[in-house]
Image 1 (tube, rainbow, N blue to C red):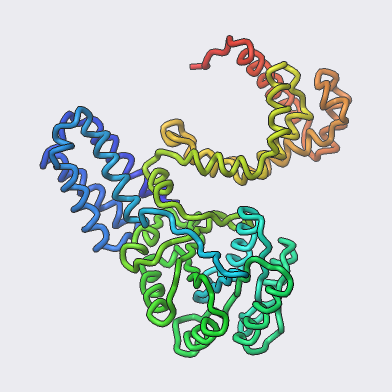
Image 2: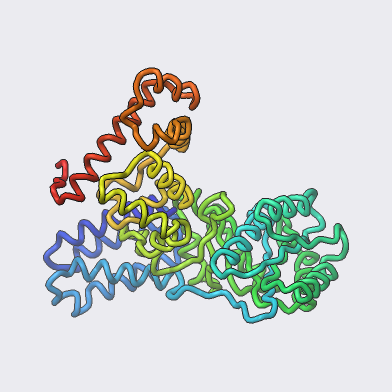
Length: 435
């Protein structure tokens, strides 16, 4: 997300850091580049104008003029203004109800039904609470079946009454949730191709029937600036409490995220970052601004690791590394832990300075990772613990068992041997960078 915008802004910042002093002349050139970068990212032109005017005024202020490193202060100004544009502070979810009731609304094709499953999964994982999914989209063919399949995949119950009145279904679902100890009720509503009176009346009636804590609008970020009109249209009839932007991982521009809060005053609460059922994250303006400017997001990286990695298993592996006892059993265990973190290329982008190290465009073929795992799984436990015993006949058997070639088996063993040597050097304090 924001790849092209991030690249453009980082190039501007790199130039500014080379200036000994910020002047009217050089700041005008920088502002022109920033303006173009934002417009190309599909940020609303009013937002662009206000943003660049504010940055210019602050960059030419007395504090920057007298700063020892005006370039560094300029970076802080841009980051602060980007953070403000994205909403300033992260907007928390209102979960005061017992149960907390969340209604998800949106147009057809925004990914609403999939998103409600992702949100239920996130709330369960982050807060150890019990969510109930409610099927109130009684118009779209197979909508109830889709939600039922999502519930089955996540092992989360789905409340449904077929194609009855959606308001009655939602009221009955809330009563069911109270009787059965559910913490959250997430209601999936019908989408439409456009905003119409019939849809809005039904949603207003549902709101009055269940009195929700949150009414969240699901928006496809690839809609661009049309998203602002959709948000405004819904909010005019229904008091929206937040926005969920989907498919942000597939939109390298992301301009709608930089325009929503400023133009509608409705906070972005969640963003879709992948198609998987764990591909929904809380939206944090400060962290997002840092990622756009190439500063990474170590906090998110640590959070993902904390959620996915078994601490005791990680400590055990670390000790074996230090003792030089790391084997292919440990390697397999580490691979399984890493897979829980999601696509590795997405994690690399969270590292500060990822672009400078060439990590922002790294492509890791999941098929290649699967081949490596298949090779290790085709070994016997004895072979994994003692890779030195793997000779010609064993290599042939492992290659056949994993559906790979002897060359691939050799390559893995060589890479593992090099990795072990590097670990030994590091544990002895003799490791030197190879450049």
